[in-house]
Image 1 (cartoon, rainbow, N blue to C red):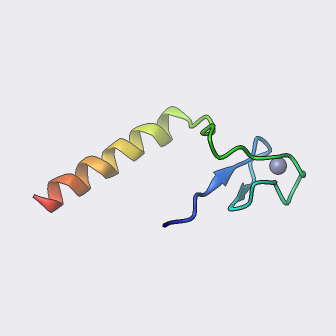
Image 2: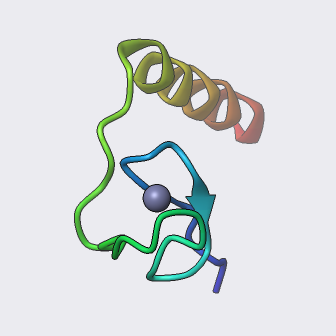
Length: 54
Ligand SMILES: [Zn+2]
């Protein structure tokens, strides 16, 4: 199983449940808010991958 990359509200990315930068807990069940650019990029990559598999 892949490790989930989490993003703290302070902007730090971590694989841990607590942010090593500011100490805030980073809840893995609640996805961080992505910018519209990130969201569309995600869909774009996924669509491209699905096309490649077919
Ligand atoms: Zn943080």
